[in-house]
Image (cartoon, rainbow, N blue to C red; front, side):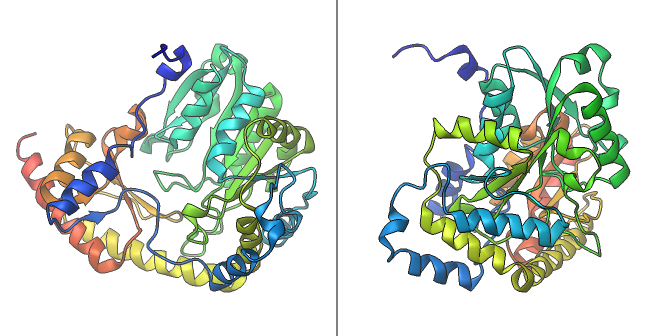
Length: 393
C-alpha cells in the first residue's frame, strides 16, 4: 500500500472513534450501558419533517442530483428563518450555501481560504472538524486553550503579534461545544473588530443557536456591526430538530465567501438528498411550534444532571445554553483514564476533555441525550469511579 500523505498523518484519532466498538462489546456482555458520549439525542424530529420526507419519496425529481443549487425552497426557507430569527437578510441564491451537515462545510471552507503554512486559530477543547480542516489544508494550527480564566472565551488579542500577522482564519463556536460557554455581545464585537483590522476570516459555528436557557437567546455573529465583511456563519438541523443522521445544514455570509465555499463543494459532492432538503423546509417552518418544547426537554435534563453530578462530587457551572455539561475533575486526575474507567467499570460513556485537545484536560463532557432518571443513574456511577480514583491521587 502506498504511504499516506504527510497531511493525512497529521490527523489525530477522532475522539469518538473507539466508542461504538467498545459500546457494542459492553452490550454484548449484557451490561446496562448509558451512552452520554455523542451529541445525539434520543428524540424524534418534528412530525412534519417525517411526513414531508415520506411524500417527497414519491416524487421522481427528488431522487435526482441536487448539485450545488439543491432544492431552492430550502435556500428560501433558510433565508426566511434567518430573517425571522435574527432580523437578518441573506440572498437565498448568493449568500446561502446548503451543506451535507455543517461539519463538511467547516472543513471544506478551509480548502477555499487556507494556504500552506498560514495560521488557523483553533479553540481547544473544540470540535475536531476545525482541526481537521486546518490540517488537511496544510495550515499551521494555533491552538487556544479555553479555560475558566477567560470564561472559556477565545481571546484573539492574547496571541503573539507574529501569530496574528500570519492568521488567515479563526474558528469560534458559541454556545460552545464542549464547554457550554456563551459569548457576550461586547466580546463578539471585539473579535469582529480584530478580524476586520487584520483581515482574518471569522468562522462562526452556531450549531447550538436555539439551545438557550433561563431567558438567554444566543445571537448570530451578523448581529454585530461589521461582521459581514469578515464572517461566515454555520447552522445545522442536527441538534435543534433531532436530525443528526439526516445531514442537513447551511452556511450564510457575504457572496464572496459563500461563492468560494460553493465552488470547492462543486468538486467534492452533489448535495444532500433532495427529499431531505424538502424535509429541511418543514423543519424550519416548524421552528416556532417545535423548538420551545424541545428546548424545555433539554432544560429539564440539564437541571436533573446538574443536581445529580454535583451530589456525586463533581464541579460544574450551570450552562446557559447548549446540550452538554462540562464537568471538572479534581486536580491531578487525568480525564482519559477517568472516562475509560467509567466506561469499563460502570458502562457509562462520556468524552474525556483531552479528546477535544490538550486544552480540555481536567474536564469531561456529558451529553444530555437521555432522560433525567438515566442521567441520575449515570451520575451515581460516575461518583463511584471518582471516589475510587480520587483516593489514589
